[in-house]
Image (cartoon, rainbow, N blue to C red):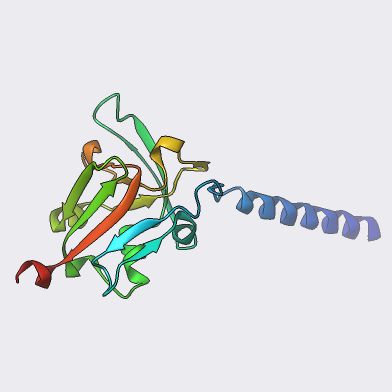
Length: 168
């Protein structure tokens, strides 16, 4: 009887250790770029910066999408959705006319209501369990189901335009 209890105890400890290490392995190691700054304009009264490390602290999702071209390939994403990001500031997508994402190379895309009503916008800080490639950092956009031309990377700025701002 005592031996059975010891074995059960060891099994329970082993399962706990496996669970801890398993959960630790779910979050990607973004330490090389976790403090890179991404400028946020128009969301609040004053512009501010966020980092991939701050985004990693939010509820994150995993998603995979395959682009229409071989160049786009298949992309794995890990990061918060735009809805999750906005919720921490008490905002919703319905408040905005558009959101513009600007890459370090000045490539930019602008998304509007049609995009976010139809698709989830994922602010990807990693490729699944792996960090983003150096030429994709600090942030990549993945919009599963949308055209892969919108999957901009090297995002260094996000510009928000409120509906009422565009009516003035």
